[in-house]
Length: 219
Image (cartoon, rainbow, N blue to C red; front, side, top):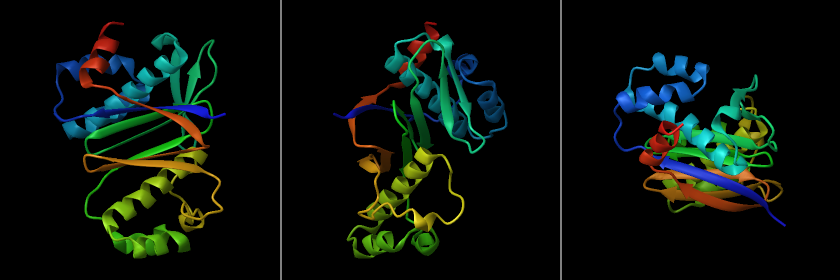
């Protein structure tokens, strides 16, 4: 018997901020609105806006509830959580990088990470990766793919447990056979996406910009 995990992803290709985005601001948290107000680049504003909108969209689909009944907060460590009146509790995780915004919704602890696959900073391997991870990277024919597989796995695991990139992260070796967590990675258009949880039944949903705008614009 597998736990169901819903993964929503959105590709942002236009990178400009306009009236459509301004109209969507009331549907995100006040904290994120303030954060966006200080951002200078339109691409950063858009990614920050749509990552929360995508999360809210995904939670509504999962719980079949009204958007106004959903609240999204953060723990002191920065892990997001959902408050949904009259609904079963769900766990969420979200991430954005490059052109992609991603969100995972599950009934158990979950972490997700996406990274644009640029030239990998291999020089940080000694401080970021454990013994088994470094051996995996050293032996890999495609260093870029191997690096971002490791990096997104580690980020996803840290998001799952809710502690972030603090302390000695080499002790969490995501390639160790003793690791009890389940990982699934996929590459999409020069981006690596990884989810971390227990072994789950994965459902992927690509959400278009128009679907997001239509969904919230109809409220």
